Amino acid sequence: MPLSLVSFSLRPLGAAKPSSANTSAYPVRGTGVAGVTPAPRQASPRAVEVHSTKPTFEAPWSGSQVEPPRRGERSPAALSRPERGGRGRQSCTLPLPHQPSPLSPSPLAPPPPCHLVKRTPGKCHFLHLDDFTAAELRSMLVRGLEVKRLLRENPRACSTSAPAPYRPFDGFRLGMIFAKASMRTRVSFENGFAKLGGVASYYGPAEHGVGQREEVRDVARVLSRYNDALMARLYGHDEMLELAQYSSVPVINGLTDHNHPCQIMADALTMAEDLAARQGDASKGMGEDGRSPEEVVNACWGPDAPGVKLTYVGDGNNMAHSWLRLAAVLPNLTTTIVCAPGYEPDADVVALVPDAARGAVVVVADGATGVARAVQGADYVYTDVWASMGQKDEAEKRARDFAGFTVTKSVLEAAGPTTRLLHCLPAERGVEVDDGAIEDATRSLVWDQAENRMWAQMGVMLHCFDCPRPGQ
Image (tube, rainbow, N blue to C red; front, side):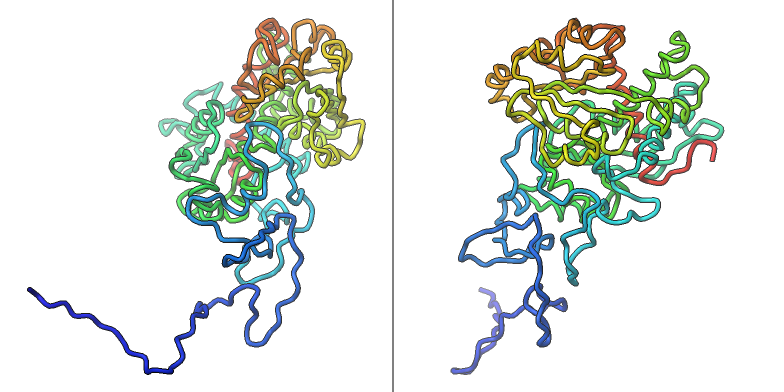
């Protein structure tokens, strides 16, 4: 039998055991170095309080002591939020845009989230609509409409066989992180990125395990080294902010339980085209009456544009939050949220709208009669499912609570002779909207909204990635 050599060292009796202190070249946060007493730190709103005798570590985003998660457990960020729902309400207790970052200086602390500080020129995240100025949002819509017209006029304008192809994403990779399934989000991002020369890769829950199998910050650091940009469709809004905080590339918010900015950009583009079609020659199609993309967008959302009144009917969920956040930026948009008692949008989001007249919440307790009264005078009536993904066990209760809230053709007629219908899809026909409304060719803009997801998101990415415009 061959002999195996075993190497070991002996410690004389009575000798002190080797120190188990951290031998890293970096100081351990909260312990001090070389006799220096660390400065007191303020707890972040994201702090998680855990009473445990187990070893703890200091969360890099909070300065609080939290129990390190074991493999397979939810992350500290996940522990601090409510149980996951669907595309519904989530109260965001995190720092709102334009507020100072709670992060305090530390040799191991990452930089503050991009949306909380001045953005690096040419590169930025897209997390909330009110992270941007009205001019920046209009620029994104113009960029999207430019590409839409370019490819409508010449479908091969971005092909490598074109004389001077417009391929600003050539050689770029977009990593798409999906914790929640979606047809429109995946297809619109994949096809839009590919049309402009890039390659988009889908990462489902089995691959990334965000907040479950693997820490959000770890996923962000790894995937941002493989990709030039990330798009994420997640449950918790805190996970989206953490992803952006630790990512070294731009992050696009594809949806969270708190907001859905990409959908609102598609809706805003649809509304601009709709208004252009009404003002111009409708026979030429939406926005194709000879005006430039800038003229089309400014006619609806410009500083001198007339007021636009949108009434949202349904649950005060992420869609309601997103419309209120847009009203906080665009001075000519008036958003009214019509909801059942107990389903109001978060008060801190309503408070973001500087003028109460531009962001009102109407609680209706008398069903159809109250809804018909609340939508009067609206240019656009918007609705969404009452029970979002992950809330289907509440569907029966919500159906009772929202009795009379179904948007029908008669509701649109009560709103006004030219009122249009908007719905972000998927729709539960006969519940929040009926066939008569959604199939009304003269009022329903639902299918234009769905298509414009692709064009509007292309405009968002072109802006956030600081890409040249066609012909430049």
